[in-house]
Amino acid sequence: MDATTVFVLGSMGTLAIGIGVVWYLGRPLRNILIELPAVFELADQLKWGLIGMMGSVLVLGWVVERSIVRWELRAVGKGKYESYRRERGGFAEVAEEDKAQRTRRITKGALG
Image 1 (cartoon, rainbow, N blue to C red):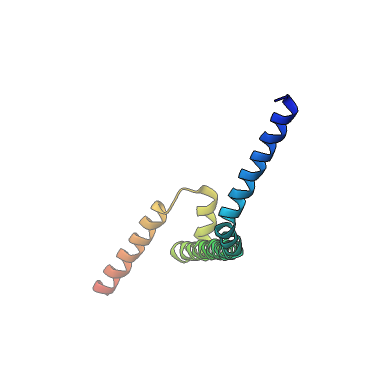
Image 2 (image 1 turned 120 degrees about the vertical axis):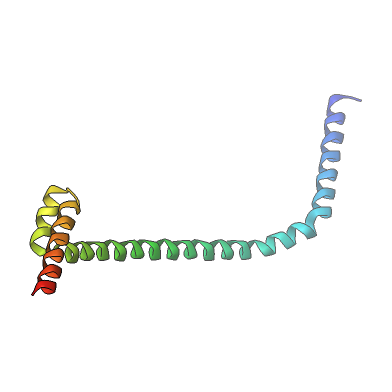
């Protein structure tokens, strides 16, 4: 046998095995191909679900941040809040002032 005959027989054998494999796996692969759009649809639903969850977490964070600023404003008072923001010293001295004022009111009410 010369090289050309060996090459042609090898190519025909490879082609026959390839056709046999495609014929054998055709039906299962066709079922997978039919189900593939459902997988992409599920992935799209998951994507939009995650986008919605991220949006709600961001809005919730924004609402909490806004309510904390309002709580600080109420706790410190309008005039004191500006100095608190400038100093960034915290509520320690403001809490001491409030405690002293409450103590004065309580003792004034009890004595008065």
